[in-house]
Length: 302
Image (cartoon, rainbow, N blue to C red; front, side, top):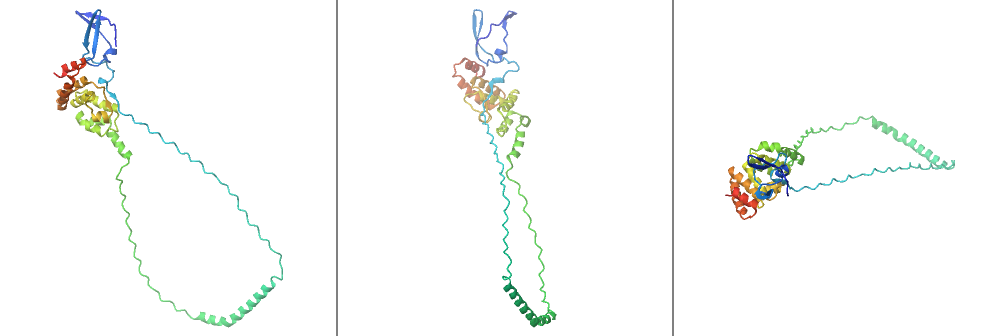
């Protein structure tokens, strides 16, 4: 990319060219650049002490590359058709039986039979009525009373106490876990990033990559040695941070020169893992003929 021309400001025997955020905020450290002034041309390396203007993107080009969860389709509502109303016809009454005409001859025999039965019943009453009256006048001997055993009071059976559920519902677990994994709660619970790192492992399903980067960048801004070491892991193409990259979705473009700088800073803070990572990264950096790699090797590996 070519920019310019820009006006040259000459003061105190020094020529200065002032450039804006269109370059400062876009060019990474140790980038190979070329400056032309008139007929003169000079090849230079972009320094590492240029501070981006406020409001620029996050330092180092950290991006969030975590896998996006597929949205779960909502189930279609089930429509239940209204019940059909079946009308029933009122019952049809049975036709009344047709009464035949009265015939005086049909009742003659039954009347004679009833008269004979009445005569027989009267004679029987005269013969046996007195014996029944005498028997009914005698006193009846009461049957001996049988004592009933006393009723044994029933012993109430105690109801078993309700057993508490051994598995709490997911909603009961999710609420306190979400509160414990909030950024403010994690920041107040850990004194440094080394103490915060194991807490992040328990919150992999609760934290977004942006929230994790906020925690990591906040610790790096205070020159926290563990945070500087993990920044180096993110840029090192030969190292994968299983928790920050695979579990929580952070990522950075491979840049061994940038990783060496962070390893060097972690080593200066007394982090032994930073010193070991710096030794390994410098051995790989020495084999890279790129100008950027040579500049970083000279600055941090000698």
